[in-house]
Length: 125
Image (cartoon, rainbow, N blue to C red; front, side, top):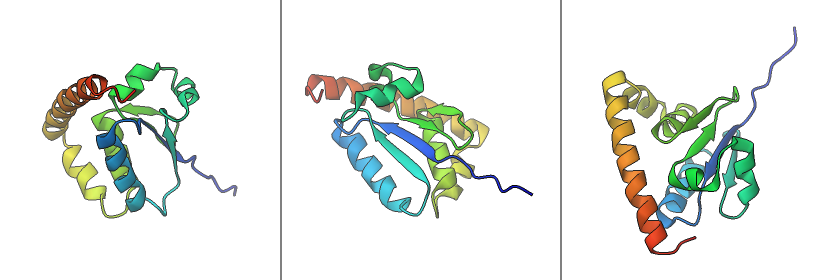
């Protein structure tokens, strides 16, 4: 029987945003032993081509490609990270419940839009 290996999770983030950078660096520490490719679209804008998206969309929201090649954006991207992060699976289960997930998506989108505007105003890119 042939063993199947899963592809690594790919995380696309914008390190030019100090809040995003701090959050991703913290997540990287928690996921050191995990098979994750961290892709900073600020230092290498060509990473965006892998998503069939544009740079501004990736600057606005976290993007994750899961081990099956399925893209997840925003709050849903965090759920994928937590599912694969040691000691954070409980977050994915709890925050992935339908009503809580809907609220989480709304809150994330509101926060992300404000953070994006703040970063643009501060000329972080």
